[in-house]
Length: 332
Image (spheres, rainbow, N blue to C red):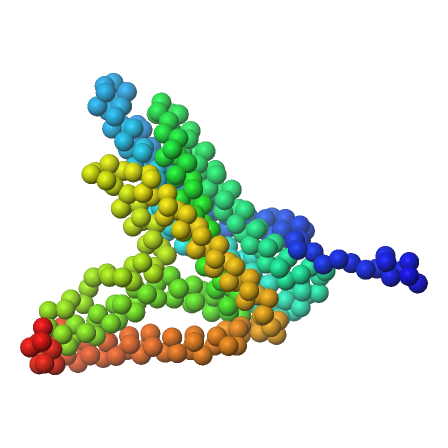
């Protein structure tokens, strides 16, 4: 009997290689589109610079290509990388964590001899592996284009690759947090949009309402909320990397580390949520019960603020210029 017990006992695993490779094979069309989007962006942006007529004929054109490579490559990784990963980070997380949104599939997966940490690490690694691999392909493509031009700026290439990877980690971490927070795919997409653009929306609503009462206050413009918008973090950092019209990689690299750290921190929070997640919450909008009131009141504030601003705009219009509240005009 003791011999049978020793044979039948199974250890809990922290990683499931079968599910990992299954995800890689099953969702390859998603990451193929990601590779295609990155490749088109790199070629369309860099090839016109490298095929500039007479690029090697004089020192001025040589200097032009060198400066263009040093400035354009990191900017592609920051701007295009943020926009593309904003889309494919959500799609990838939605794919690899889709087992959490079906009750039968959730029960089947969690009956395997794998800890919840193992399911999380397997799904997270399978989603991030393809993204990092696609970034490496884009890096090699940019390197080949530089060889075609005859000049290689390896520091800019490496910054381009790390910026892409930082964007991938950041947005995939945000999407993983959203995937563990909710219990169905539509709730995940809604929460993902709120986390990425909620700060901008709140500021726009506040500006919109106050512009109807406060004389001279513009309803348009962007303030502090841009710092709470992940998709704008890397592009702003890349734009601020200039010192006296010279692109300085040293000012951009710390922001790359911040972006990657943000994604890893949110992934750690997602793991903590997963460890306390009730499996019966599959298909529910919010899977974590203590956080349901927060989500409810936040969405109520956003919707009510938007409707309030819309109502004031329809009734009074922008031409009030503070006349709704004379004291505001006097104080301003």
